[in-house]
Figure 1 (tube, rainbow, N blue to C red):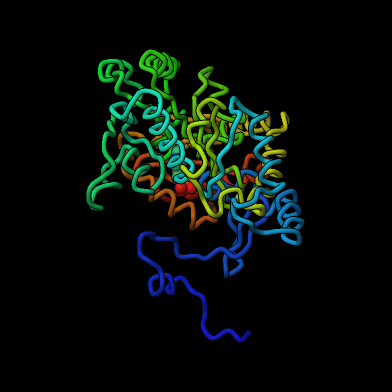
Figure 2 (figure 1 turned 90 degrees about the vertical axis):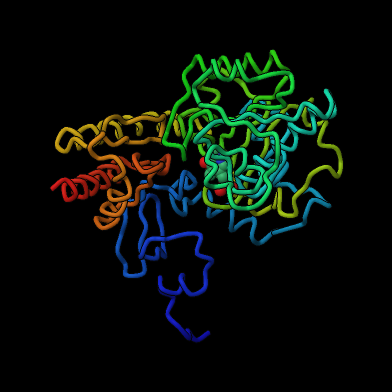
Length: 404
Ligand SMILES: *Cc1c(COP(=O)(O)O)cnc(C)c1O
């Protein structure tokens, strides 16, 4: 087919809804932790598509799984089940506390299912007055109206008319305020076991433990949103496994598909009985292509050597960031776990995370930010030492330029 126009960045402004402001370059190819743009310029990828590309770009196990399934069967809907969905569900239940799986297509949808299950369970078992959802400030749970309302930033949920009701936001890591506020009317507490978008904020051991105890005391469900922390990101398959606290419901997406859209809500057999036939659903949920890719991803990422490799790479990242900071002291601390890391800017550099992201891009490095004051790194979980070294050299050049 003849090309009738050039696909350029400017076309974005002409034909796309302006809710994003993408960078000027358009990537066209990726391999491992490297990406190339239209001009053939190469980038080291420390962003990983926002904690999605857990095996890097076009990893052979994903490509093989996709190609194999592409010749077999793409879609049925949930009028019938399919082999990849059943195999993936079995695999996920073997990896964590859950007995049952509901497939969705994104993190927001997995969380939507989690919240609806919690509300349905409480209504069935305790009555309609037990409907309060408690979540935390700076938390992020997706962009559907329910999930964005549960998220802890009113700026994201304001301006769309009346919000889903009975949602309370409290301060993360403040156990006393939770203890004071929570009651038998509380249906569920939803939290990230390490806040991602909110700035890479870890919960204290006392806080997670206390949240679990308060949930038990008030017959409320504990929902862990592991959309960003899950699938090996922190060095455990799910982050809760490193915290010693088990949720009742867990949502997972992002790295689950390694770049193919899929999400899942995981729970116990007892809770799952409350989503009876017809109570919830999704046309694409459990799609064979998505599940075939995710099965390959989970099989690979859950290998002990891959999870151990995440912890090894965390140390390489921390060491390299410390070395840069010794020359150009702009970071207060490097925080987070595994390959979900945030470098928080010092007082003097407040508000300049985006400047670093842009400067890094100019040096051929993709990074992320988490708020205005944190540079975030969520690379491939199998990124090579060589790619880390090269990316860090580029980051150092970018920071040196800004530091002038
Ligand atoms: C990204 C994210 C979501 C939303 O996932 P989508 O796939 O964009 O809907 C929800 N929760 C957390 C913690 C996330 O990081």
